[in-house]
Structure formats: C-alpha cells, structure tokens
Amino acid sequence: MAKKKKAIKPQREFTRRQLSHLQKQKRRQRIIFFGGISIIAAVVLIVLIGWIMADYVPLHKTVLKVNDTEFDASYYIDVLKIAGTNQQSSNLQTLASSVAQQIAQDELIKQGAEKLGITVNDEETKRTLQNMNVPVSDGSIGLFRSQLLQNRLKEEYFGPQVPESEKQVHAMIMMVESEKKALEVINSLQSGDNFTALSGEYAQNYYSKNVNEGDFGWHPESILEEQLGSHIPVEYAFSAEAGSLSEPLYDEESYKQVGYWLLRVNDKPDADSANVSALLISNNELAETIRARLEAGEDLGPIADEYSNYSPSQDKHGELGLMVQSDNISNAFNGYVFSPETELGKWSEPIYESQYWTQGGYWVVNVVDTAEDRKLSDDDRNYLIGKLFDDWVSRLWSDPGNNIDDSYLTDELTQWAVEQALKDLQGAGSNGN
Image (tube, rainbow, N blue to C red):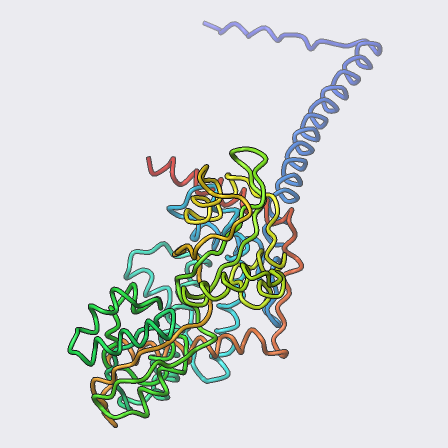
C-alpha cells in the first residue's frame, strides 16, 4: 500500500515592509544585548577602578624609606595589626608612630648588621615562625627576623667584646639627705648596727630605698655606677680596701626622693584658693637655715633662684601666686596651704615632702669585699652586652650617612592605615568567634 506523502508546509513569505520591520527589530535586539554587556562591563570597571583607587593604590603607597629600602602601606598595616593584637582599639592610634619607628629601626639594624657580615634570611625566619606556630606574613617575618638578628649580633659580635671576668666589689651604699644624717648613720654602723636596717630608715636613693636595702652585692664598676647614677660612691668603693667605711661623700648632682617645703600663705580669697609663696628645699637642716634668713627679712627671690627644687617656684622667684585646691600640688603642700588653721603671712616650719625629688645629698659607702678578677654574673654580662648593642643602635640613628624619610606618612595616610588594621583585626576576631 503506497504511503501518503507528508504535506509540505509552505514557506512563509514576507512582504518587503515586513522584512524591513523584522530587520529593524533584530538590530534593536543586538543594540540592547551589546548595550547590556557594555553597562555590565562599565559597572565592573567602575567597581574595579574604585577598588584600585580605594585599596590597591593606597596599599602600595610608600610610607617610609630607610636609605634605599622602601616600605609600603601594606607592610605598615601588617605590622600595625601585629602590634595591635590583644590591644584595645583606642591604643592602635597611639601605637601608629612607634610602629613606624620600629620598622625604621629594624631596617637600620638589618643594614648595619650586613656591614658587619651578620645576616638572617627570610627562609630561616619563616621556618622559625612555622615551628612556633606563628602566622607567617610580611610583617611577622620582618619583626621576627629583626629579633633573630639582634640575638645573633649580641652572640657573635658584641658578646666577644665583654670579658668573662673583671674587677668587682661587694659594696653596701646609701644616699642620705644631709651631712648630719650621714654622720648619724656612720656612727651607728661603727657601733655595730646593721647597714640594711639603717638603709630602710635613712636611704633616699632609689635602689637603696626601694630595691636592695643598700646591699648592692658583687658588681663591676660600670654596672654599679649605672645603678647609682653617680660616680662619687663608685670611685670610693673601687679605690678603698675591703672593710672600709667612708666619711660622708657629698654629691651635688644626684637626686633623692625627699624634700622640705617652706610655705607662706599670703591671702585666702576663699576656702578653696590661696595666694602662696613657696620653696622646696633639699634637706631639713638647710630648710631651717633658709627659714631663719627669710624671717630676718632677706629677699625671697634670690633664695628661691638658688635653692628651690620646685621648678614653678624657681621660675617665679618663690611667688606661686593664686593656687586652687584642685591643683593638688601634693598632699603635704595642700594639707598646709588649705588648712583653716594656717596663719596668714607667716613662713611654715619645714614640711616633709616625699612625692618630689630634690637635688644633692651625701653618700655612705661600706666596702664589704673586693676581687681583682671575679667572674661576671650572667645578669651583669648580659646587661653589658645589651648596653653595647643599644649604644650601637643609637649610633645608627645619629649616623648622618643613614637617611630615614617618614614624610610620606601623612596624618591622613596614618589614619587610613589604622582604620584598615582595625577592620582586619575586628574581622579576624569575629571569624574566631
């Protein structure tokens, strides 16, 4: 049986007008399509340009230059984040300046160490950080490399410059406020009294009063002078024989934590204000002498210029003028000036003051023992090595051949960097939670 032939659908024929309309419609569709792509591309480009201008370009801006080495904002932000870890956000702005100084100093040390033939490379630093489970970043590499470098400098370069042993003395030392007090201490010691017990009562220098009760133990000359802040007792200790007890040794330069006010309240407008003349004198005996001179009619100005240890008093020639209770100069000062029992126009007796430091005093030194060549303690030797290193770093900073340019780090750039660091720290904190 013959199959029926499938009917062929006749092709649609368009009139010329219809063809023209169809072509226009296709052109419109192409225009709309390519226009849409163009708009999307433009949006992407705008976003990309915005990111480049807002983040990429600022991140690659130079913020610091140390000789020929440049540091960009990205590195600065990284170090800021490390410094800001476990810190309150308000502290990061305060840290910004010191972070820049730290970066500069680390680079100075790196360049200075290279001249001495001592280096630490990045790969070595990365391995150390990884072994310590510390996140590896440009900032952490830079900071930790500097620490490794400092340790190597101290061990290989500065350590050999410090001897294992040298001359040392075991000395007991205190500063007291006056010659009279020094003689009292010396007489008590000669009578068999204990030095440390007397130091607790009489000592006014920091270490003897607050740290060791006057017993300094064994030390070389340089460390003993560093602790005392004066060469006068040290020269005696290193020139005297074991068992020697000094006479009072006067020191006009050193400071002690004691003084005596001489105060005169000239007028009291009300209970919370007073017109005051004031001197802060180095010791009680001198204060008594000066009080007698003032009561005898001697001019206050020249005496204040020469003897007052309170700088506003010295600057104003003894006349502080109108003071208010909220100024809170000290407990001793306020307690007398604003007391209702204080008599106007009369100089006070010497008033003991422990909040301010005054200049001048007398040393008492007892040389317990001496040794011409004694092994240095680890603490003393490490201190001397560290001091050599610190002095070297100071010379790097002052070397005119080193050029540190931080002019790139404007206030605006610093603020932006702090904000970026805070944003990253807060993001890391929220991710950690």
